[in-house]
Picture (tube, rainbow, N blue to C red):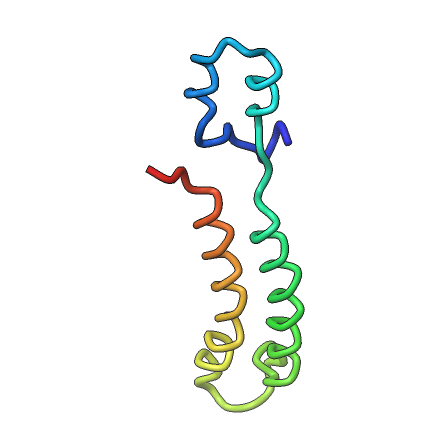
Length: 90
């Protein structure tokens, strides 16, 4: 948590309450369950699509970039979920 965590969005508001339990509970947070679920679900999908499409095999004609690009779209979606979930909601 210390390496990857960030303060919760309401951490500064908790400082005003002077309640030590509330302040400690509002310390560093970790990426949400949404982020973890998205990564756990979509990374294997990405790897499967990469394997089935042969995008990393190096065999075949030139112009395989589109297969690689389309295969990595689920990973980009998972990264977008993780980035969105770690943003402060201002």
